[in-house]
Image 1: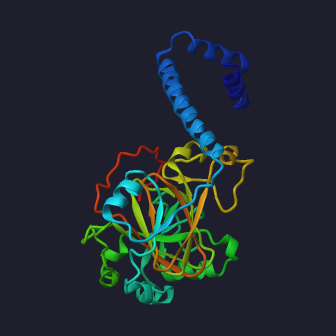
Image 2 (image 1 turned 180 degrees about the vertical axis):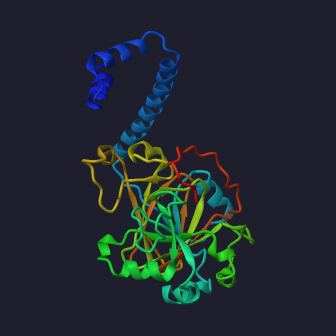
Image 3 (image 1 turned 60 degrees about the vertical axis):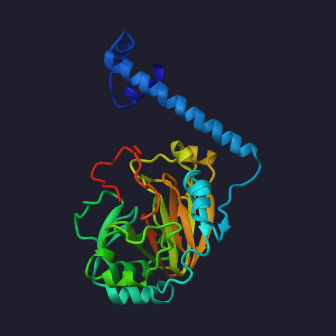
Length: 319
């Protein structure tokens, strides 16, 4: 109770009034009892997650993302989908025509004037004034303006990646779908609208750390993509609100976010022609190591709808 009183006093409450208020809570207030029950359940869950962290650390082996080829549909289902385990599939899209046709320059020529969604923890200068309909991390800006803005910044300040789920079903981008081939070991042959996202970044451009409520296959068409992954079992270390975390894995600030010192980050580079399986719930931050185009696919040939509770930031919408 002393901690609660101190917190109220820090917010300019009278100390005696704060003490009386807290004392009233401890004498059977129904709201307080309900909150205490929820708090106890939360602490129990967090202690179990911390135990898992400690056991993983004692294993003495850093986690790595395996690079695999020839993975059958059954092996994928058992070893990665059901196990919630990431993997790089090096042969899932090697023959896609998009590998040679989807350079950043080519996409810019086709979609340069089109408004695309950008994931960024900073307001783009090219975003319309007052446009925060997507919440604090999602912005719609013309592709050409956005890329020009990024290229005018030092590499270490290029915050934001294009990640748009609408453009490939719109007239401006629908022809690009002809360049895709479906590997039916993992994907359905005809994706539904919004099951494919187009991702674009110039050298150094990086996304915020975010989480999806579905499994995804991230296919790198051109360039290289550095991906930092954090297990959903370490969500309690990420200070997240909704589907985004304020933690920047490229520049971790353990003073501001001390629990991040306890977590394990798994880093992997995905090259052109490779596919990264990002399991549902895994946190990930993407960074273009050079000018890069990629696709994020949700049309798995397996059930891909999940109930993943995340408190949503006011004004934020999920992707």
